[in-house]
Structure formats: structure tokens, C-alpha cells
Length: 180
Image 1 (cartoon, rainbow, N blue to C red):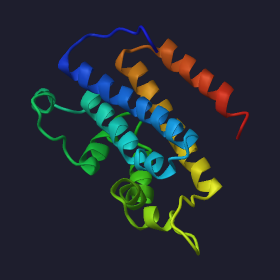
Image 2 (image 1 turned 90 degrees about the horizontal axis):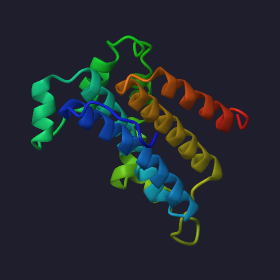
Image 3 (image 1 turned 90 degrees about the vertical axis):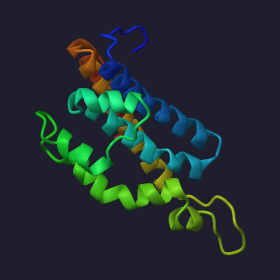
Image 4 (image 1 turned 60 degrees about the vertical axis):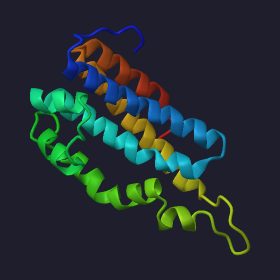
């Protein structure tokens, strides 16, 4: 995706930056898992999801005033209204973002804010140490790569490049579908 260009409006800079952040969080998650820093890797999953949702919303739904306010330092709206607006758009009406939020939000918050899941994952019978189950780490990595792919496709949509979106999908399938 290096070298792509786009119209440098505030809307596009905000949207593409947030979608890029979504991809960067994926890289951070992989790096942290590789280093055995699993709790912190899990803590990045919520910000990764949020940066994707915000990126799409600022690109496709936000008013110019909302974009300007954000650029000026205002907080974005809460995640649920963003998802509701996005899911009114063509291509998003299947409700998947709502399902992700409803099915994982409590856990995502728990990971990010040091809740009981983070505590339980550090306790064994005799000590406090990282004790994440392999299947949970695999689920984290699978979720992160899906969000990253969505972020990359979101950038392709923002720059109006069907060719880039198709190339990204083909690369994703080549890398990940043989594993499934």
C-alpha cells in the first residue's frame, strides 16, 4: 500500500490515518505476541476495532463539521452510533459490526482496561505469570488479521481503487485461506 495517493482533504487524512492505525495495531499485536507480551497484545484489539470503525465513519458518514471538530481535538462520537451509521451504508447492512460489538465488547474492554480476563490469564495454581491459552492467542491473531484486512480494504475504498482492493483480497486469500 506504500505509495498510494489520495486527495488530501481533512476527511481523507483522518479516515486514511485511522485505517492505517488499524493496520499498525495488527503489526503491534503480532510483535507483542512474538515477544511473549500477550496481555498487551490483547489490549490492542479494541483500539484496532475502534480505529477501523472510526476510519470508515469519518470517510463515509461524518459531516464536515464533525471532521473539523475532530481535527480540532474533539472526541469522536461513541462507537455504537458510528456503527449504526455505517450499517446504513451499502455493503455494511449485514450487521456484522453490530454483531462483533455485541459479541465481544465486554471482553475487549476487559483486555484494554485490565479487567478480570487479564487477571485470570495471569494466575496459575502457584504463581502469577502469563497463562494465556494457545487457542485464545490464535483467536487474537485471527481477529487482528481480519481487522487489518478490513482496514486495508477501507483505504482502497477511500482512494477509490478497485484494483488495490482486489489485490489485497487475493493476497489475503493466498496467505490465510490455506491455513483455514
